[in-house]
Length: 487
Image 1 (cartoon, rainbow, N blue to C red):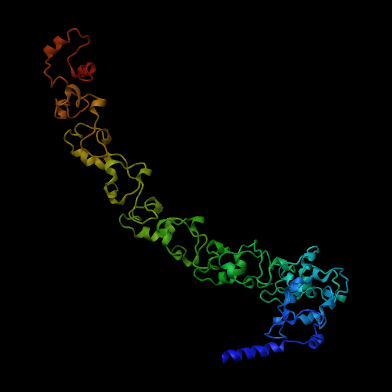
Image 2: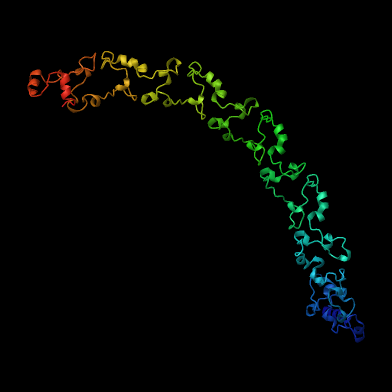
């Protein structure tokens, strides 16, 4: 039953499209000479979307762009295909009345009548090549009031067309800011849009926060190229600063000394470029601790200007009572106030040996720190007076302790008996004595000595041995004269 109904429906549909000879003679396409099904389909007789069966590519006019979407009768207008005209002017009115002397397709394309075609290339030969958005606009947008659509030469400066844009600009008020009328200084003619604008800010490179702020924030009254100093824009900030008070402290108006373009705060003054570079503990000190009363220029740089109270309060030792010099750097460093580290080597008495570890007050008694004598005996007289082996006082030893003693330790003495006088620590006399008095029998005079009292050389035997020695005499001085090395 279903099959029968389907055959009946199809048969009824096909019968609609069967034309007899009379109908074909009265059809609008009677001159086509082809069967209807070459162009029409059963889906719809009049729908332009269904004029798909006819192959227009085989004709002399290929359908491109907008032509592909136009209904057949828009061009063929109820006439047979043989009556269709040739050339664009068959369908399109020649508004230029052949003044251009070129075919329509030289400037227009099938993609759209208003779509610029080959004339873009033709425009390259003029003083104004079409770039960016200029390629997309209608010719009449620029060539206005042209009689008979004749495109006579036009002014080619930006302001000739865009003066109205210049006058009405508000993002940056061009008129108030006295901006240049040469639009290309800020706008890119190769872009397809008027914005965003760009300006070569080479005279004042925009860095940090400057790069993101609107032009009008700086250029409030105009675009004066000479206003490139910080204070030109930031004077209100300078005047309003209270910590510290820039105006009262007579701060320099070059903001970049302390501030950067990244952010206004925190400020970072480079003290290394000043007369007083910050080192050690000075780095972490609050500015106001030295720059009191908002005094930031002409601040003295000597230690005492800031540390005079520390000087006056010092008790170990008492600086004021001892009349210490007020140049704190002589004993203290910026790394820390204590411990003090006075460079004694820079004085007339360099510290060596045990002197380096001795407490300062051992020498500098009664808080006397200047004008002290530097002779050994001035500090070591008690040891000189108490010495008994030998008795320094009785022997009238020289007061220059360094002749026998070194700074590393007081004992043993370092008198160079072997090198300067007579070998008693080496040679024949090594281990032959135990006390100085054995040779220096006169403790009141250690310059005198005896050679004949401690030896087995009696005068009789010694005289016999020196019978043939000219100038021989039996005494210690002559013994030493002939035997200086004890041999």
